[in-house]
Length: 318
Image 1 (tube, rainbow, N blue to C red):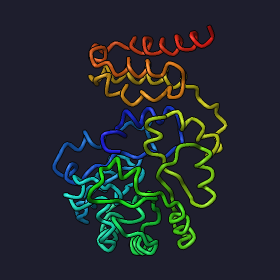
Image 2 (tube, rainbow, N blue to C red):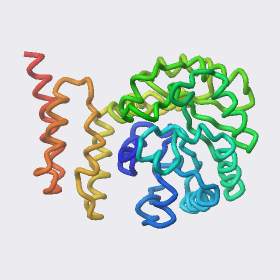
Image 3 (cartoon, rainbow, N blue to C red):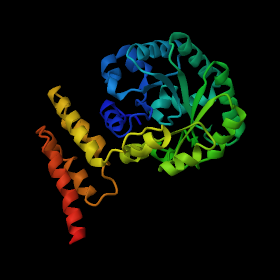
Image 4 (cartoon, rainbow, N blue to C red):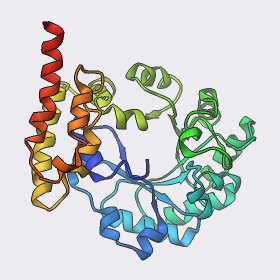
C-alpha cells in the first residue's frame, strides 16, 4: 500500500469505521533515520488506532525507528516481511526476509526491547517456488520465539523475480488453509489473514478460523465496504453511516486541510471509490480527478461530482 494509505486516506477510512485498525504505508528505516520524520510520521489523533509499518532489516535501525513511532503516538509497530517489489529487495527487506527467519527474530527482539507497544509481523506464506506449509510454520515459530505474538498472513507466495507487485497480488494462488493451519498449530498467537478478501461476509467466514482479517486494496478502491464493520464485528450501536454522511465529513476535513495549504487532490484521490457501484460513479471519479479544477482549491467540486450521481438516478427513474 505504499503511496496509498497516507494520513488523508486513513482519515477517510476513519470516517467510515471508528474501530477498524488502520496501517500506514510502509516506511523505511532510512527514511526515518535520515529523512523528514514529521513528513512520514505525523498523523492526527482522530486516525487512531494506527499501526506504523516499517521496512528494514537491521535490528538497531529498526529499534530506533520503532522508538520514533512510539514517541509519535502509534499504537503498534508492524514489520513488513511481505512486500515483493524489486525496490524493496534491493534494500534487503520485505518478502525476501522470510528466507532469514532468525534475522527477523533478531529484528523483532530489538524492537520489542525498544518500545512498550506491540510489535507485529506481516508476511507471505512462501517465497518463489517454496510451496511447503512447513516453511511458513517454521518462520512463524522462529519469530514467535523472539516475542512476536501477532502475525498477519498474506496467504500467497511472493515471487521475487519475474512478477510485478501487482501480479504478485493476483497470480500466486491464495492458500487460506495455510493461515488456518498456523492458527491451529499456534493457538496462543494472534493470526490474521490477508489477500483477495472483498466482502464482510467473507470476513465473517474467515473469522471462524483465524483471529482477524486485513482488507487492503478492496478497502482502498471501495472504502464504503468498511461501513458495516463497527456494528458487525465490534458491537457498536451507532448507525451505519451513509455515503452522503461520509462525504459531508470529508468536505469538512478537506476544508481544514486547504487552510493548512494542502493540495485538494491529495484528499480527493482517496475518495474516488466512495460511490463505487452507485449509478453515476464514473462521473464522480472523473470530476474529482480533474487536476485543473483541483488546483483551484474550490470545494464546490464536490457539488459538481455529486451532480453526476443525481443525473444518473434521474436518468434511471425516467
